[in-house]
Structure formats: C-alpha cells, structure tokens
Image (tube, rainbow, N blue to C red; front, side):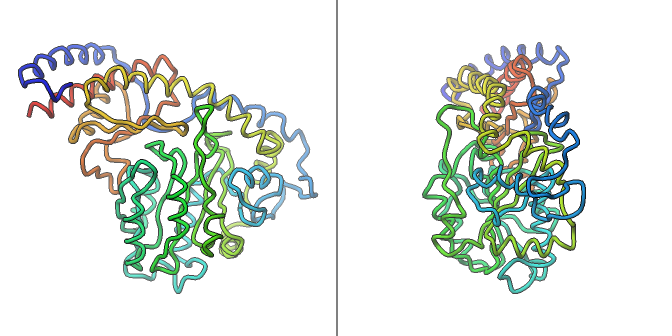
Length: 423
C-alpha cells in the first residue's frame, strides 16, 4: 500500500510508473470517455424503428392522425410504454420530445416565470431561490440552476442515498429552498440506488416552502447490468400515502433505450400537477412529435418489449463495466489509493482518488490521449471540495479501447497519488 511506503520507496516507484506513463503517452491515442453516450452498436438495435415502424400508417389506435396538430400530453400508445415503467396512471404523465433534460429545464423555467401548483408566486419573484444538490451528481442538473441564478447547496451522499438528516433540516427551515435534484436509481455518477427508507423520508418531507418540488430524474430505471437488479420504491405512491403527491416531479426518457437524438421524454406527477402544467404548456406548444411517439409504441409494443430490448443493451455494455471494475480491483485496490461503488446498473462508475488528485488524474489522462469528464463537474459550480471524484463513462468506447484507456487511467491514478504523498 502506497501509504505504508517511505518517501524514498515512493520516489523509486514513481520512476517506474512515470516510465510506463511516458510509453502510453508516446502512442498518440485518442479515446473519449467524457460522456455517457451509447455506442454505435447500441444505436443499431433500434434502427428498424426508423425504417419500417410507420410504413405509411400514421393513425393511432384511437383515430388520431399523428401527422397533425394536437394531443398535448402524448398519444395513449406511447403513454402505455411508460405507465408501468414509472408506476403512474394515464393522467399522471406527459410524453414530450426527445429530451428529459429539456423537460427538466422547462419545468424550472416555468416555475421561475409562472410558479407551480399551490405556490403563492413564481419562484423568480423571491429575492433568492435555492436548490439542494446531492453530490456527486449530474453536472447538467447543476448547470440548469447556475444558468438561472439559483443558489446550489451541496448535500453529501451516503451509501443508500442523500444525507436525509441534512435534507429534512434544511427544507424545514428555509423557505427559499424550492427543490432538490435526485437521480434515485443507479445515480449519476455513483451508481447508488436510494433505499426504501430514503424514499419514504422524501415522501414525508415537511418543507417550509409551500411550492417545494422533488425533481426525481429516474433516467436509469431499466438500465440493469445484472440478473439481480436494484429495486426502487415508487415515490409518487409514497407521497400519496402522506398526502403530498403534488411535491414530486418524475422524469425519464428513452435517450439510452432508443436514440439519444430521437427518443421520447416523460414528465410524470400527480394528476393535479399534470393538469396545471398542461395549462402552462398550452402557450408553448400544441403538441410534441406524435410520429416519433407512434414509432416507439409500434417498435416496443409494451413495457415488456422495452425490458427485453434492454437485455440487448446489457449484453453490449456489461462487459465494458467489467473491464473498468477489473482494472480498478487489479491495479488500484491493492495500493489503497482509490474507492468506488460497484453499480448494478446505470451508465457510470464514480471513482474517488486520494484527496487532491482528481484534477491531476484528469490532466494526465488527457495528455496521454484519454478524455474524461472534467474533475469537479459532479459538484455544484464545478468545485469538488476534496478534489477526488472522477466520473468514468465506459459505454461509448469498444472493449479494447476501454481496456487501454483504463490502463492509462490506473497509471495516472498511481502517478498523481505518489505526487500527493511525496509533497
């Protein structure tokens, strides 16, 4: 273990590691692991959706011409795909365009400009608006807040979800806290799934703000990597039990199921919330792309079809996660210079190096031709207080490319760790 070595021993080790690193650097590699993108092989799985799913038949099963205006909340065939996926009813969801991120952005923009159900005034009319941000988290969530001038408060993660003692205390005391970001299943990037207790504590929150909202981004609810997937309690059902069903917005999409550039996004909430939101949206659009909704409905047929389809995705990406975890266990674990959670699903592995090493690791990887998500990106304002968290995105490279990238990554971890330990 590096921490047990003397400074002289560490410096001798550094010479060997530096030589290995220089050899990788000389290869002139160009490998991109910066974002959680499906690989081309995954996109090929749904190619037939673009070729034969319509074939001149554009009318939905209840007689709607999907080429024309109308149906703001989405055709029923598309809703049927998502109702069992999220555990909601027909009138508790809106099927939108291709991006759940866009639906989240719009939801906050509407809240800022127009307010939410039960609120006294739009969020933007308050002197300050704050959001709780469990971290490490999804950088684009944080970017939405930052773009709208919403103050972000970092909440640490525990092994089963956010620190709920802190969440409960903060929302009960501060009326300016209007929401919290959550990726409750196979969280981005840590891969943690919220425990039943955490979900129930969310449903029992007593916010001081009457217009507080839980932004429940369930992006990875069907993205399993094992035969024993995690399970997640239904947040809307739990909120109904506490009489607080208006407190939660749920989001998901098929971005990593069909096409990131041409999938379907969904907003689910209480029926009262959905009706309120539809009224606000009616000034924005007459309806989303129903032809795309019809394509998806005909291709997948039902939720069972989606689950079977995700087994094909798993066959492609599970070996890549095995490469990442194997390399970390082989090269890093014996040296005790890093920690990570072994996810049962999702798109990422979150690596925590020694404090003060993340930026250096990312820099060393970049110089050797491996592009990673920027260090600090998984925290509000891009500031990791300990400079140790790095998001590894294994899905896009081939297995061979990933193996080489992880060799370089582990070498960079060793080099950065030695530099910190010998200061």
